Length: 526
Image (tube, rainbow, N blue to C red; front, side, top):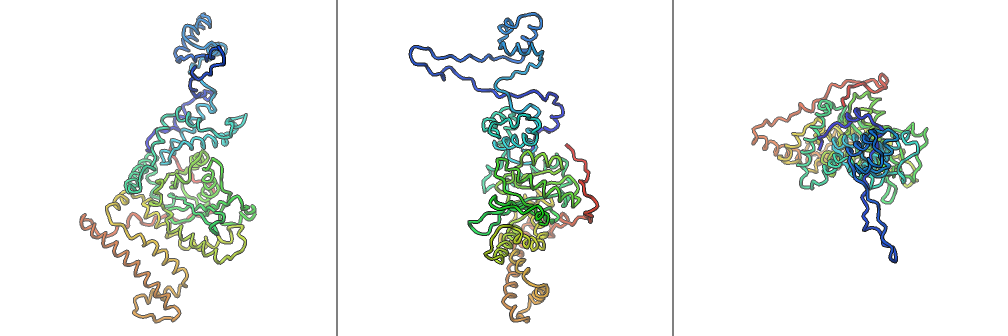
C-alpha cells in the first residue's frame, strides 16, 4: 500500500512542458450510421489511419530526402495533414497523438499524479472523485497558466475525464484498489495491525522514525458537531492537539444561515470561524484549518519541523491545496484507518463526550434566548475544557498506541483480555462530579473515603455516598483488569511490573513565544 516511487523526483528530469497528452476517442463503426430513407446508401465514416511513432519518423525523413508528401503518406500510412504540419513547422516531435487536445500538459498532470501518489503512500484512499478535486483546485492555484480561464466547460472535470486520466496513469489506478474499507467489523485487530506495519514502513522511508517519538511533533485532528436543538442548525468544530496534551484553538464552521462575526470581533475570539463548504472541493475545510489554525499555532509555539498529523483521511479528505500546503510547510499527514478510526482515536471519545456534556450544560443555562452566535456558549466550554484536556489527550494518545509509537503493544492486546469498556465512562463521570466540588470538599471526601460513617456536614452525606461508590466501582474494574493481565504474564514468564519507560516525560524545556516568530529551519528530505 505504501510502496512506490518518489514521483516528485521524476518532475525534475522532465524538460518538455509543452508536450500535451491526448485522450483516445473510441472509433465509430459504420453500423452506427442511420440509413437514409429511399435508396440512398448509408453514409460511411472515414476510417482513422493507425500508425506508429516509427512510421511517422520514417515518413518525415523521406520527405526531407526529396520524396513528395503525398507519396510518403501512401508509403507509410500517415495522414496527409499530420505529415504536412510536421514538415512545414520543422517539428521533429514524433509522438503519436490522437483525439482532442488535452486540458493539461504532461508536466501539469505529473505534478498532480505525484501528489496523489504521496497521499496513497500516507494511507489516504484514492477514489475516482479525488482526481477531479485535484484538477479543479490545481486550476485555481495555477490560474496564470490558463489565460483563457478554466479549461473545463462546467468549471470542473467530468467523470469521463477522470476515467481517461486514470487510463493515462495506470500506476495510479492500481493504488485505487489499495483501500481499507473491505475489512469487516470482525477484522478490526487484524486491519489495525496491518495499518501499524504499513505506517511504520512509511515513516522509516520518510526518515520520520525519530520525529514520531517526540510528543511535541505528533498531532491529530478530530471534529464534533454541536447544535442547540434537534432541528436546529449544526456547528462543526474542528479540534487539534498534540501528544504533549496541548489543545489547539478550535475551528468553527458556521451554517450559511448564520452570519459570521465581524473582523474586529473575530480578532477577540479564542477560535477561528468560517462558513461550511458546499463545493466539490471538500478538502477546502481541511486547508482552511491548516492555514488559519494549525500553521500559525506551530509558529507561535516554536514547534520544530517536520511534524506528523494523524487524521481521518476518509472524513477529512485531502485536496490539492491541502497537499501542497503540507509539502511546503513540512507537515506530514498520515491517514488513520477508515471506518475503524474510533479504535485509534487519539482525541478519545472521553474528550468528545466532555465537550458535548459541557455544551448541553451551557445551553441549559443560556435559556431560550435567540441563538445567533457560538461565542457566549463556546467560550465557557473552552474554559472548562482547559482544566481536563491535557490528561485526557495524553491518555488518548497512549491508548491508541500512536504516542509512544507502539505497534507491538497493539498486537499484544489482541491476545490479552481487554479492560471493561465502562471504565472510561466511569472515569469521565467521576471527573465531572469532582469538577462540581470545591477543593476543600474533595479533600474531605478523599480523607474520609474509608470511614465507616460520614462525619462531615449532613448536606454532603448523599453526595459523598455517590462519590465513594463510584470510586469503589472504578477500583474493582481496574483490579479485575490487572489480575487478568498478571495471569497472562505469568504464563508467558514475563515480569508483572508495568513498563513505564516508554511513556517517560520528555525534557522539552520552555519556549519563549516572542523569541521566534518564524518556522524553525529543519532539513526535510524529499
